[in-house]
Length: 212
Image 1: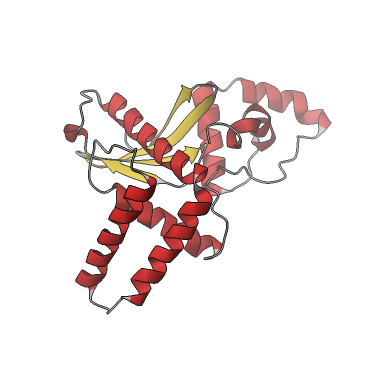
Image 2: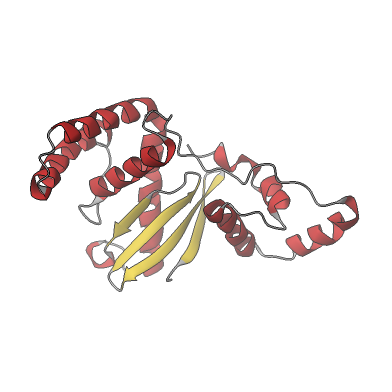
């Protein structure tokens, strides 16, 4: 299951992620939908799931649960995380070991305040993954940006010209669900435009409005 797309139904929406085994005993999932970008790692032999596919599905569900908390508490989480970064900077004496220790202590408080209901059954690196994800988000979008991690489509996808609509639709519908999910994942991850973007948006139009 190295570097493959995983998806499953949850209620009336799909959870979609990219799965990669970095090492034989270390799996990583990256959320693609309904939220985007968050990664979570886990060690299969530390879980209660004997089957590899069940393990990565559970890991992806864990990642989704964390994203749901982030999105539902986005204003307070964004505010508290900015304060955390400012505190880290204030007490940064340029010693790496001190920085890591201060970050760890501040993240313990942050996790307790916002993720107290979350149970990590795979590893102890969840707080590190959250720190990395939120730090990257504000570096990419600006320190004062609104926190919104919902999945985005390629903007302004145009329908095929009328004379090609029937043929293109026939090609699209000949693809099975997994192939269409793969096309969707590629669009979201690469932000590149493709032949079937308009059809994907029609089929998965509500993907950013469900599940979060």
